[in-house]
Amino acid sequence: MTNLLLRESWTFDMRTDLLYYSMLCTSLSLYLLIMLTRQIKSQSVCSRESVEMVKQIAAKLNNVENDCMMYTPTQANYKNCSKSTITCFAFEVSVLSVEIQVESLAFRQLQRILNRVTKRLQDEMEMKCPVCELYKEESTKTFLNTLQHILEQMNAERICAP
Amino acid sequence: HNIARASDLCGPPKKALNTEPVTGNYSLNSSIRIQCVAGYVRKVGTSNLIRCLKEHDKDKPSWTSALPLVCIPDPKNKKAPRPDHQFTSSTTEINTPTISGTSTSITATGYITLPTTTNEVFTTKARTTNQPTLMSTTKEAEPITSTNAITASSIASSIATRQFKSTTSPQTQSSSFTTTTGISLSVKTTANMTANSKVEPSFARSKSTIGGVTSIFILCLAATLFILWWRSRRRDYTNVIVLQLTNQDAVYSDIPVSVIAPNPNNASIDSTAVIGTNHPQADSVQDSDSIHL
Image (cartoon, rainbow over all chains, first blue to last red; front, side):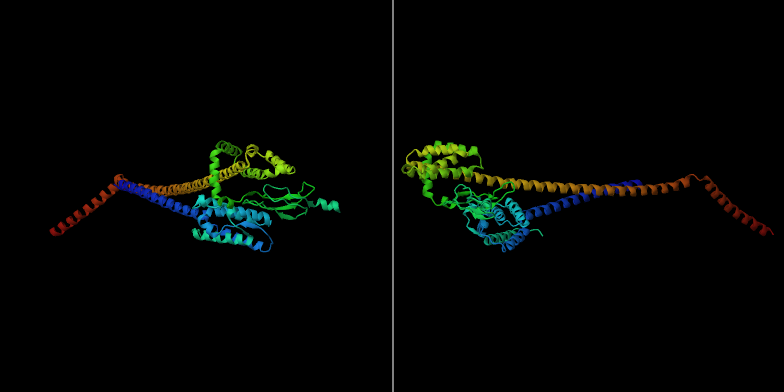
């Protein structure tokens, strides 16, 4: 009689353990899935550090005389053609870095970030987005200022992970 | 002193397609900006700034640019002439075979050379414009000849040949034909760019999806391994408990053995009982003796 009681207890414990492990596994998987999705979605477009890089570049260029003129989209262009707008900025940033010839890590990092962001964005009116050459050529100061505002707007629109 | 100066000077830079010519000599480390001709603009991602620099493996300085200037037709001019577009459409219908040939050539040369091809065609257009002066002045032949030379050196020589044939037609028709071909090339270029832009987002999406799925799979695998490890550890602990219970059973089994086996214990118990029984009998005997007395 005593042995039977012990065995029954043992069987009950196995069932409890299996149920416990299943629940644990499920909850853990769901948690990881949610966190991963949130992280990918937020970090794919957000670029908080890019704003700081633009500010650094602008500060350096304030001390350098230059007559560079860059195709500069506006914030209104970004609203409907975000991908093509950022693409234009990426192209012109590379031109700016070549013409200014200022040794700065910020330029390379900014280009990399803009290229990465471009791959994640989608234009709402893809077929109707203007080519870069249609935008007005502006001075370096205006170009960087506009880029900074657009990046800030982009970060504000997307929910950036802390 | 003059020799030293000459060795540190750059001559006029080589003229690129659809750019304004630049004359004069420039000193070492100087820089100038090249301008596109009217109707053309700087292509995005290219720089119109060139510098006079001396490379290590060369004795004389030369003009250099990390992002060489490329001049393309001004897109603003393309949007405006809608009537011309209609005219072009009608012309296209008449000259379909030639346009088909042109398309084939474009496809063969590939995407990279398309801008150059487009520029070549527009160069030919310029030559057509100069045709009237060719009849009146012999000197004009030289620029046209140089243009042909440039055209011949490029991959699009077959297209240029076709253009040359078209110029033998009446001036009006040849002009319209040239315009037609130019616009067709532009449209073709735009189509290719659009196709490329469409392909890239889907590739980016699939890449992102694959990365995400891979990450999730790895994390789930890690979680599973952790759970299995924890379970095995818990099982070991359970086995320890079972062993303890087994020991308790062994202790319990000793008691029945003591009850069954020890005959000497039973004997001692019987002797005790006998002693108890004898004692009452002795008491009864003493009572009877006292009564008789």
